[in-house]
Length: 292
Image (cartoon, rainbow, N blue to C red; front, side):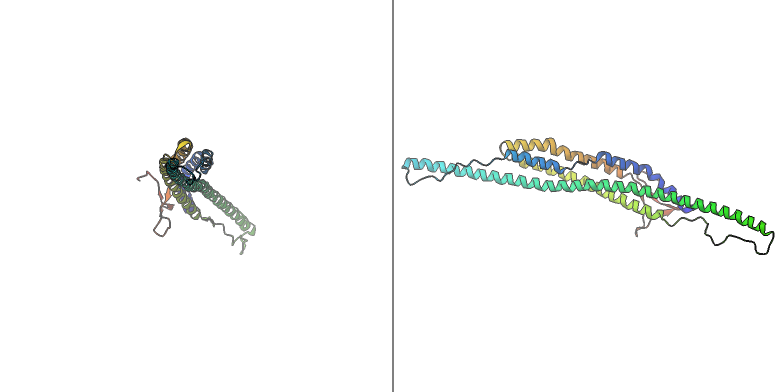
């Protein structure tokens, strides 16, 4: 059982780091979906958007005196310019609304990433517990083998005494009682753990990048909204600054903190073919900050 024991002695040292990371994930990753703030933003904008007032009627040029006709023509030109301006503003508002829809989809991806971080963290804890269980089961199994071996030794000794020097003393044979590493591989269990650690690391990095890019998109959206007119401009910018931006700053801050924590998890050193490197019957570990 020596190699198995050495393997577990090397692996069990990562337990405290695993607990710390899993605890941190559930402390700072919120269950509240970020897309909710965009749904609320849409309602704010809808409340500000009324039906455009249209008092532009076709002027009657046929029955007007020439002076009145010139006045009405001038008035009509003003209306044309006003309508053209209104159309430009409508296009601008439509562009802003389209960008908000795109950013809501981006928020859904961020929500999915946060869920994945929690799933991988939970799986990491489960894999570590599985390794502890495997170690306990194998220890119990080998202890039973050892006890059985001692019992069989005593029974065989007593059988020989009873035989009183007979030619064919009775002996218990053919029973496998030697200590073994067990049919369950702790190396395979650690491989599953280490792959999950990689998935968690990649997902946290992705969440950090997604949230950072989203914050830049919010800044651009605020610039676009500043080109709008009236109440919708002021209320939209106010909502972006007070509700949307702080939400994603919190997500980005949590992702950065997790990125630092996950980077401290020890990792198994692998060969180019993906197999673990062994030293002194233990899986060689890369421990961040350990220069030994």
